[in-house]
Image 1 (spheres, one colour):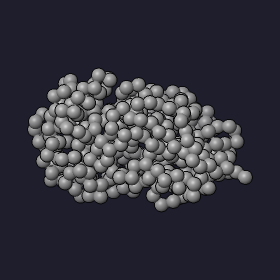
Image 2 (cartoon, helix red, strand yellow):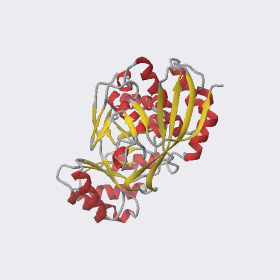
Image 3 (cartoon, helix red, strand yellow):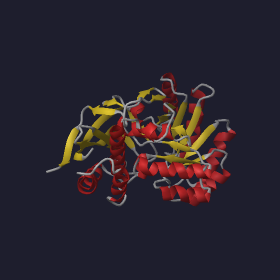
Image 4 (cartoon, helix red, strand yellow):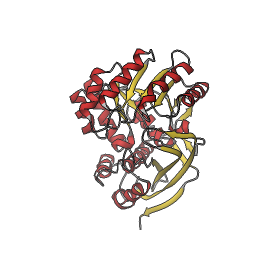
Length: 368
């Protein structure tokens, strides 16, 4: 199976409601879609969202990395030389983790198709079902309570609550949500780096003292402040999940060695795809630290790839793959089925994606 053409372009998917965090507001998914074609007629699919405030990657930057760095390295190569292809992708450019992730997942898709097996089975996975949480955007407390009730009606029983805009309101936000949802609903908090270490400890302990029963807090302090992250972990009654602080396997190792977090959040767009995500999961396993599988604001091509990883590695015990559930439409054919909180894998080869509607091609590199 030889790579004969690589094309990239745009997919646009409206959101059900605006997505708001301490870092940004988004009204629709505007992602780069990648297609890698082969001489056997098989196509590998990848996707990358421009999340500049987190990864530094813009839409134009992702396309540029594809055109000038990644695609020229892959064209004409054999898919069976898989380790070689993974090395080419990771060494193709400095940073550009989202573009690398799109290429990585498209190559895993082709590798599974080459041998006629789903990627999660290729990785030794036995799980075929996952349960995801749903994100509640940061707003006024009463609006967040209404959004939480809507999520419950949709069948979700685990909610990730965005906070951090005006931290003085954060306890009120969680109090309103807790009162609005049934007893037993899991609540996770995501501050997106918005708090200072001492502020985070005060807010989190106040939440627990009020009986809000928070399962975990995601990235309470600035990504670079690992000492601050450790400070919160050691003094907070709420377990700490490192997210924006974990981009590379090297980042993960540093946090694990410091004991700076209780859990790690693996996102393909931060680490450059499944290849590096597997390394992070293995290190976490060695240290006895559980992981969450997360996503940016992505459509089902990318989130589907993350689901394959989660089904393959038991160290991934928590799932935050709600991107498709935040979208008002789904242009993707094939792959895992997303039905409310339930993600159900299929036995389709590769990643299972067969086509994507509404693809607007912006560039292509073909063999002469």
